[in-house]
Picture 1 (cartoon, rainbow, N blue to C red):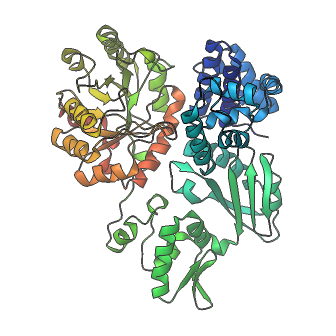
Picture 2 (cartoon, rainbow, N blue to C red):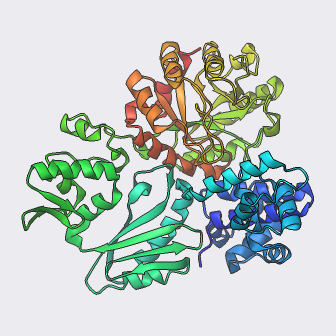
Picture 3 (cartoon, helix red, strand yellow):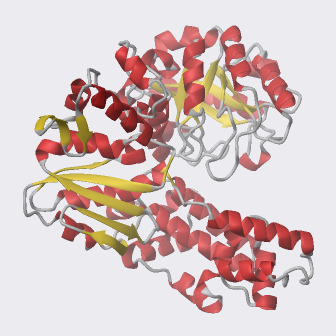
Length: 574
């Protein structure tokens, strides 16, 4: 069974959870959590790196011991340490850590004092009033736990887009080798580049009597087959991700792809237009009575209702149909349009590769320039740079650039925006840089008014160029801070500065709706990788997907400009 980075990360997280419940050495626990984060954020599969003979110890936070465990997991699908820890504690006990308000110490108390091992047992204990008697809990905590358990039960699990891609890419490659299969494509919210997906919808075109369904349900990663018929099947993978497969004839490919890509609201709107024209649209084609008139490709489906082709990322029924009718559909930005990346880190702060290595990796992906933007001194956890270290790095970039061919390094900084709106480094130091990225890394809890004013004051700084990850959110981990984004966008327009769309899969920040607002207000957006290693440039694909969901075109994106055109744009903010 192919082992994905998300699988290895989940194993390391569970090891850390179990060690923490047992009260193990905090440094050991942190090592497993850091390794899980590294694997979870790594665009390349660890399996593929091992197959190429790569030394995994060059990955951040991965030493010989952890590299050995990764090799064990990839080779066998098992981890002997985790199996031992599971024998020492019930397998389900770590699920309790998913309940808000329950940390390892409380889980340990619930297990030892009340023999609570599962979420269901936790619910009964809270409902029966047995938790309040435990030391350190009380009636209020018990009531909060009960509410959290009930809220948890009502949630549908969703997977970050980059995690879902690991499973989708491997499964599609597997299905593509099936005899008689022609096309394999992932539809649904994955194709629309939603930031999280609840399941995967895979569409296959194949000759008659093909074995696609049997091969699909026999896939090594399948944990449960929910249904299997002649042309459709549904399974649950061992990761918990549901995958639905549909097999259609080639002549129905376009209609089926349109139908299963969605969104539901978009499809309903298209079907209503069709009904007014006396047509019927379903997954098999477009019909006038019994006559099939379209459906071999998606463009034919749209033509049948008098519309041009609408890109999948726009299909949310948020004005795309009206724009199509009026000839106003955007020509969406492509990954190949990006000429550079304006946000990257090296091992000088919390990155993991050298200046030269980062430059060569960016060049290999077709980029012409790369801004090196380490953290500033306020972010001590990231080994942020003080004025002296930043000056030294600037000198190093100046020495290195003449040796590079085909790419130019720009001098920058990701400077902390302090609570009062001031920047974390003095003006004379910032003035030497090509660009200054301002970022909020603290006091996310400020009121809407104070948070907004804080950012506006920072943008007024004469050297401010770009606002990093503008909402501060981490998907499924931290909500956006409360801020008046429209005021910020309009202030950026007034100041002549820019907004970042951070392509890291945990961020994807700007939100797609804010991208649209920036476009409408005439503020350029920079699609940046926030790369902390040479592997991370691959995440630009997710940033481009988010930009396309936000209706952005090439001319709406700052880093689609050549370096010669970029320099006067970023200098304008000085």
